Image (cartoon, rainbow, N blue to C red; front, top):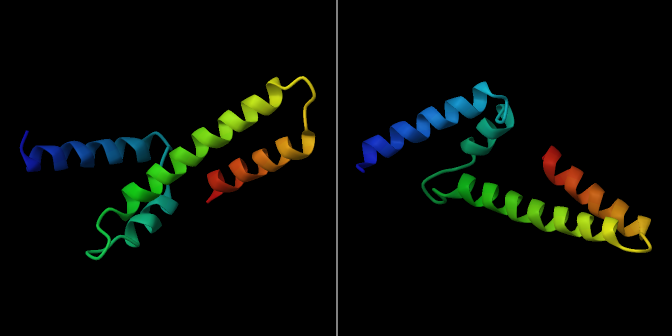
Length: 87
Protein backbone atom coordinates (compact mmCIF):
# COMPACT_ATOMS: atom_id res chain seq x y z
CA UNK A 1 0.00 0.00 0.00
CA UNK A 2 1.50 3.34 -0.97
CA UNK A 3 2.09 6.27 1.36
CA UNK A 4 -0.62 8.46 -0.20
CA UNK A 5 -3.27 5.80 0.32
CA UNK A 6 -2.25 5.32 3.96
CA UNK A 7 -2.38 9.09 4.52
CA UNK A 8 -5.89 9.20 3.02
CA UNK A 9 -7.05 6.38 5.26
CA UNK A 10 -5.59 8.11 8.31
CA UNK A 11 -7.32 11.37 7.31
CA UNK A 12 -10.71 9.68 6.92
CA UNK A 13 -10.30 7.74 10.17
CA UNK A 14 -9.35 10.93 12.05
CA UNK A 15 -12.40 12.75 10.67
CA UNK A 16 -14.63 9.83 11.58
CA UNK A 17 -13.35 9.87 15.18
CA UNK A 18 -14.16 13.60 15.40
CA UNK A 19 -17.64 13.05 13.94
CA UNK A 20 -18.33 10.27 16.44
CA UNK A 21 -17.19 12.44 19.34
CA UNK A 22 -14.16 10.35 20.30
CA UNK A 23 -11.80 13.25 19.53
CA UNK A 24 -12.23 16.93 20.30
CA UNK A 25 -10.31 20.21 20.38
CA UNK A 26 -7.90 18.80 22.96
CA UNK A 27 -6.67 16.35 20.35
CA UNK A 28 -6.05 19.24 17.95
CA UNK A 29 -4.04 20.98 20.68
CA UNK A 30 -2.04 17.79 21.13
CA UNK A 31 -1.38 17.62 17.39
CA UNK A 32 -0.13 21.21 17.46
CA UNK A 33 2.61 20.17 19.89
CA UNK A 34 3.99 17.72 17.35
CA UNK A 35 6.84 19.05 15.21
CA UNK A 36 9.81 17.95 13.12
CA UNK A 37 11.89 17.37 16.24
CA UNK A 38 9.32 14.93 17.62
CA UNK A 39 7.21 13.70 14.68
CA UNK A 40 5.66 10.83 16.67
CA UNK A 41 4.57 12.91 19.65
CA UNK A 42 0.82 12.26 19.29
CA UNK A 43 1.35 8.55 18.76
CA UNK A 44 3.56 8.33 21.85
CA UNK A 45 1.04 10.19 24.02
CA UNK A 46 -1.88 8.04 22.83
CA UNK A 47 0.11 4.85 23.46
CA UNK A 48 1.02 6.06 26.96
CA UNK A 49 -2.62 6.89 27.70
CA UNK A 50 -3.84 3.46 26.63
CA UNK A 51 -1.04 1.67 28.48
CA UNK A 52 -1.82 3.58 31.66
CA UNK A 53 -5.55 2.98 31.20
CA UNK A 54 -5.10 -0.77 30.84
CA UNK A 55 -2.87 -0.83 33.92
CA UNK A 56 -5.29 1.23 36.01
CA UNK A 57 -8.41 -0.67 34.93
CA UNK A 58 -6.63 -3.91 35.83
CA UNK A 59 -5.73 -2.52 39.28
CA UNK A 60 -9.30 -1.32 39.81
CA UNK A 61 -10.64 -4.71 38.79
CA UNK A 62 -8.25 -6.51 41.13
CA UNK A 63 -9.13 -4.17 44.00
CA UNK A 64 -12.84 -4.81 43.48
CA UNK A 65 -12.32 -8.59 43.35
CA UNK A 66 -10.42 -8.58 46.63
CA UNK A 67 -12.09 -10.23 49.63
CA UNK A 68 -11.50 -7.11 51.69
CA UNK A 69 -11.64 -4.03 49.51
CA UNK A 70 -9.08 -1.39 50.34
CA UNK A 71 -11.19 1.67 49.60
CA UNK A 72 -8.24 4.05 49.98
CA UNK A 73 -6.32 2.23 47.23
CA UNK A 74 -9.43 1.91 45.09
CA UNK A 75 -10.07 5.65 45.47
CA UNK A 76 -6.46 6.35 44.47
CA UNK A 77 -6.74 4.18 41.33
CA UNK A 78 -10.05 5.77 40.38
CA UNK A 79 -8.63 9.25 40.89
CA UNK A 80 -5.60 8.42 38.71
CA UNK A 81 -7.83 7.02 35.99
CA UNK A 82 -10.18 9.99 36.07
CA UNK A 83 -7.23 12.36 35.95
CA UNK A 84 -5.65 10.70 32.93
CA UNK A 85 -8.99 10.66 31.09
CA UNK A 86 -9.64 14.34 31.70
CA UNK A 87 -6.27 15.42 30.34
